[in-house]
Length: 288
Length: 250
Image (cartoon, rainbow over all chains, first blue to last red; front, side, top):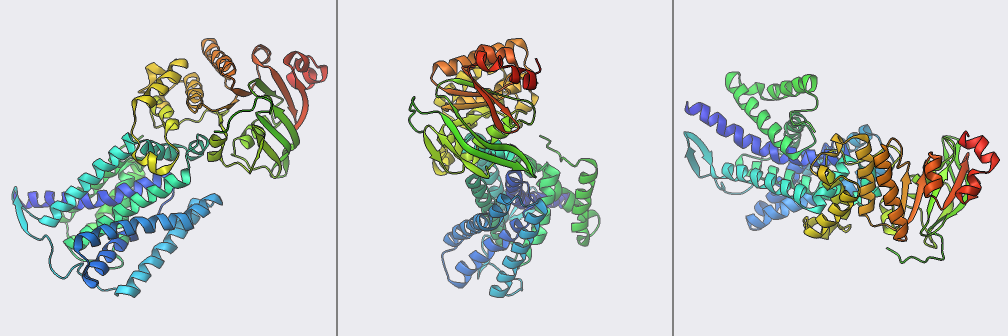
């Protein structure tokens, strides 16, 4: 029975990480309607910023984490401002935007590899927040509890921001019809820029948390992107709540799937779920 | 928004030209819209009425010509700029924020335009009261919590008008606001247009219903193949034989 509780705990932790990635992906997808691959590499950007500032330069860890999150957000904003926004103004197709984001993803990942090598790294000199707790028979570390709390706080904050602030309403308006949003006076370029900042910062936070929980490598973004995207699609691609539901469905299916098969099947199980949804419920669980 | 000068036309275009794939939609068009009046733009399909509205609201960029708003020539308009010039519009095919409630469709235009203040701005009573006022004027207050996607065709038209009213603009561009409405809804829109005129606002209508045009318009402009065919009072223009025979089908 303890094993089942442990799988449930693992699923909640993984689902929390996917939530951070999928929420951001859903935010940029709903405002721009393109598949932003660079979203994945922001996890590595956040993680390696903390690695560089904290481990190499010796900056206090909390400060390094804050800078890491902000830097990932800023880089997302910069990529939108200098690449995606000009392409959108030239009426570039979704395919062109996707290829551009793939190029940016590859370039950023290569830069990280050149700067810090392609090896696995630990994000700090000593193990941080690794104290273990036993909760209903499941072992959970301090950092894993922080992962769950971060996802919960991010979800509540993002939902409040989108539903209760006027700027959040503007983001929803841009998601619904960008041209009409422009006509009623919303500067959609700025709205989309801030959506990119928030999304990339969340991805950066996810990367940092993964770094403290296990290890980091320059290519960590792709696998996380695919899980996050799967969660977004399963959740319906239009709402943050859908992204959360999708994230936990993906993580539970993934963790129970590998329990009954083997760890090697992890990705195959997730992508089978994706294919099933694309075939039978392409609009996801939460349809709007 | 700039201060109005009653002596200057609300809107004017000079030598405006717009092509679509080799087809001339607006051909060296020059005209002006009187301040504080209701001006109807009529003409057959393809005469350039909606293209003109789209150009005036920054959706299309003209290849040539100038646009003057309240007497000042403006640089090529972007859609998000038109609000700064005191212009708002509705669409021929109604365009709402479908996944937002009726109330939010109105509240969104009451958002502060600058990014940082709007980031922290929350819904307050002032915005709510303003939204209530325009939704009550369009008989949609009872529907405020419904998703826009679930409204009937006529209610959608009314909501789009309510959204434009909430902008408190000086110039209203309405593209076929009466099309497909029940008589009771026509009366509501009619009353709104009259009220706007009484408040000194400028209204530009693209409309096909000649009876409505006669009743409500101060000025009528007839377009043909992107050029100005006739303009003047409704009685004068709509009784011109060439206009009636060629374009109004009467």
